[in-house]
Length: 151
Length: 414
Image (cartoon, rainbow over all chains, first blue to last red; front, top):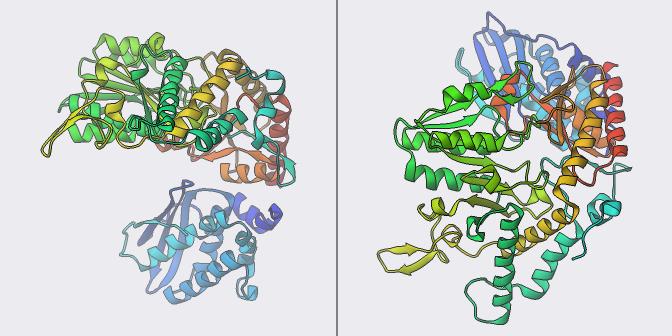
């Protein structure tokens, strides 16, 4: 087994302990929910689209430190982005957590998720919030979509 | 078989003698599945090497040996649970299939619109969803006996049972031991009170079989379900016990070969139990190995296994409850209704992180919702960590568990 400090880096522990943008967003015009049924992790993402850009974004949910920290980091990185930009960032994050190989200079503190690729069972934890956020951006206004996310 | 000895019980279990992540394995996930003694593994191998054949069909030597061993296993299991008749033991794939068979066969025959199916707030999904389905199909209502104690001490509210057990209740399904809380239900009393209103009883014995002495006649249940793999037997084999008078009135759940007396192109008539409920070639090898597991456990003595489990769980509860930030769910230390498993929540650390760190220490735990999502919501928890003890666990392993939990607290406290 890989050293757990690769997985639980200080950025992860910090965001797990003090999640950013956690809670409901009263002004949200988009909501989406994600579940990992096998482990019971859940994440609801609330966001307000101003035009095509994310004006505000928050999350609520429960799960392991990886899922909570990744969702917290996600809110910081998606604020101000439009859908193509958000998809590009998630593309890098997905590559990072599945292969560990990515140009980390684009990702700043998201690079803390690099250790996830050594723990395949945790990839779905790291991607849960991101899937919910992208669904919220793509979805109908104030419509909750429940997705069953498998990878 | 020579009786196993408590002095070298760990030597009987080959799987225990390995390192996980560089540390000797500490297996504390017995609530999920138990490890297998050599005698059970040998029974499987011996059957496939010597006796493998189809049962109830052949007139040749191997088929007769296989049939004798298969029916011998049925009689052995009947003795293990003190069934009045081996025909009351139906082999299934496990607890889940057993409960589904009752829900479909019994539910179809007996449930009508307006009837009530009663269960409890802490059933495993496998003793909840089949009743949701059966009640829905019949137009019946599903009701729940609540938990006592807002802080999740986890005993059934027996006073509420008086109000809930009305003549409309046609069936009462409940667990013997909660897989999440560790509560031991007063099953004989529950059956007695259900019988007083004419309700049939179904017991989920998945967590109790192999851990406590179990006598279906003394309990007085109509049906009882369990899995072989949680009592040192193989996976893929389980039992539905049913009182014969009830079984012979039910239609088969699955149909096919082996269950019929006479077949025409248009119709068929059924054999009595147990064959009526065992369509197709049964799981002969695993049934025989389950018989070997009964021998093994009774060789050690189930009352002594209970005492061993209790000693370890009390030690673990005492030591874990002394750690700050750990909340133990379920009956209190030393409570009469506390079984050999312990669930706990960590302040600020999710159960999956706990399990990941324990695994690094070579310790196998379970973390999650334990197939008990409604109960978790009721307790205001999303997941707990569970350590479940069995006959081969030791006090040293309890110490390893406690040290690992302390390491996790230090790590996440930063």
